[in-house]
Image 1: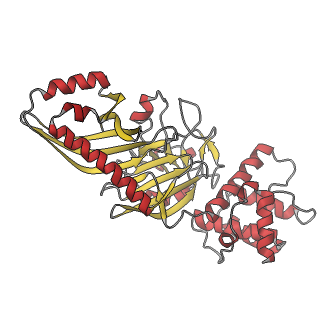
Image 2: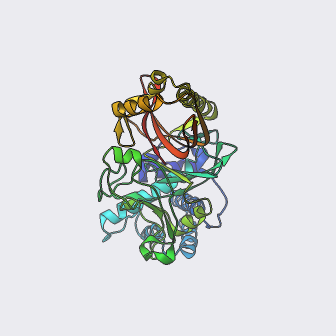
Image 3: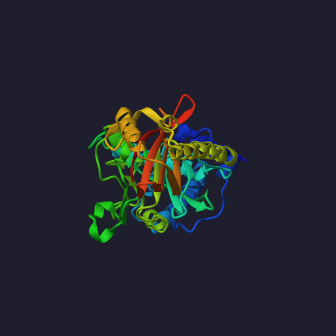
Length: 403
């Protein structure tokens, strides 16, 4: 018990933001194999517990093992310096070493904090990210990023229900998140997907073990005038194991071993990437309820289109609507004109995905689906994407485009 008290005090003293963590999470036990990010964080946890208990010899051995496994891990070198200094003077904080620039030490302290948070605050086992309302059958996994916690989560599509697979420490833009324009060094917030895979053989060493570009800016970004491009998930240079929490030009950056691990779960063209400031979690009952409520609104839109009742059909579109370069009035005029020649309409929908947008200002859901349209004088198949927004308690379409 004394060890736990010392450890807890140590975390409060060195990491004031970690006050809310519980003792039970901190008592994890066995020596990890140091094969991945989670193992490294378990080792860091053990090192700091040993330091808190004044077991400096044990802490040194654990840290030496970490450096032996990852000789380019800068945070471990910072701790090594602390352990050497502790032989002659009490430690006041992590990075208590003179003649090291404050900014570099601050960044490594923040990495230590975020890694410990990731290790001690695992995703709740009975909850799922609110954003993953429905994955298509070909979307076998989804990636969810929490920029506030410097964490990337991988979820598996298990019969339509997200199931936690793994989580990893990640780096975001130097200036944080909510990207607005080219060169602002911020990471975008939104719903995206991986568009391609670039092997390390075609990249500069700066990008590490490879890269997975995403489709920023998406339709919603462009509608809001957001600029920039080249947002990737990628690795780190060979001279370092990881980068501080805020160090990229806007990309999501992982250690090379972690990037290589998540590569097995990424399918370019289909794998969704939801980047949020802070993940919202739902229990499964609430998740199912939100999913069913929106599904009902979507199905009603489809049936009202088939009914050829333009008042009902256009009632599903927001007055701020934008689609195919048209505003709401232009869209309504076009649809009314087209409807004049219709005697019947059938709209088939398949491969539907639904993602709640990580948008603090509006409730929004983005859907993508294969549409099979048939009428008395036209047949058409296409993949479509819609952004639905909740206005006065009702879901309406804000953006509709070919995907």
